[in-house]
Image (cartoon, rainbow, N blue to C red; front, side):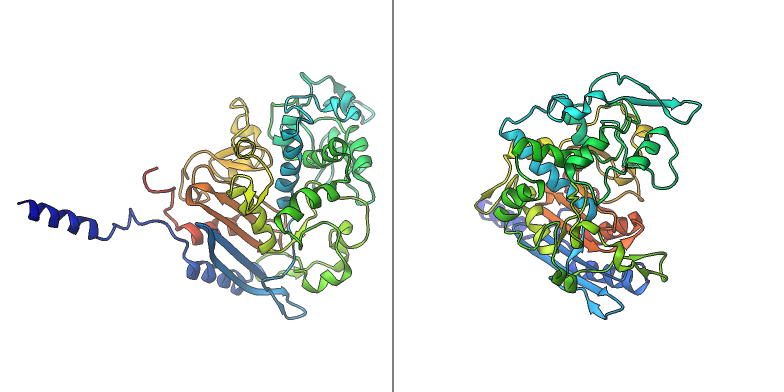
Length: 421
């Protein structure tokens, strides 16, 4: 009897796990097929994907061209303009200074940048077209600046529709001819769209973060990031200011509808990157490769550490990757953030707080955090699966559908999180 029980136990151990219990692994062939279809369908001209899982590279796939007109394919060392994927880098830089006790998260912004002491809320328009201004119900804090709840604007996408954006359009705070100090002085003159903490509104707040880094550290923003993030992580191919020689590896940006993508002209490159303009934005502007940015993503996955380099404490990273939004900010007051998935916002990251709720929602795991970029780039960190993913392409307008389909290629259409969740 004892032998029979022992044999039965061994047999049960030897049985293959069911499909539901099998550990998740990304299917590189499906990812490659996804990229090939995107290019074949004319939805993008070229793209690459890098997946890091369980401490090792799991997939690298690429398809199409970095420059179609020059017949130059996407390669491992292709340079991409990542636009708003710059924002998490800026947030990490600022939170390093928080760890050093340089500021408190709930400090009023004006304590460190006095130009913001006179901030007002735009509350209508006077007969002469000037904004009706009132005092905000409370001061803007640095926490607000980190989570897009300050009430700042990003300026109008078209003709200004409100008094705050009209002031922005007149002052042009983010002109490439401004320094970050000049940006901040002009930004402080732009009225708030809302009272602080009442709305999540994507804004130039991350450029305010960059100016805070300069003031709190005493270093030029780009120099600070290079010294305290890029160099320790070995990101030698990342930065804002680039040389003319870098253009030979730069992916071109394409614009339009599927099957009719046209290249952006050369003069629509980010001016500050290649033309010696003074602006170094906190919210955009980094040019990098998938391998370089993966070092940054792996540091995030490693709770602030990559190899011997400690960039942040684990507790600081957990704070950044925790939903910081007040539950009273309803879905209607979160702009387009709900389209990213079931979750909220931390410090410069979207944070998933619930499994996908519908078939059409982006696939992902609870606890993942991520951001994306104007030219349809995307990265995410999935601690539950010990995985980081980068999707690099250069297509505008921003394509959320492509991201949703890419996540299906990575996770599968029915994925809602690790088994047991």
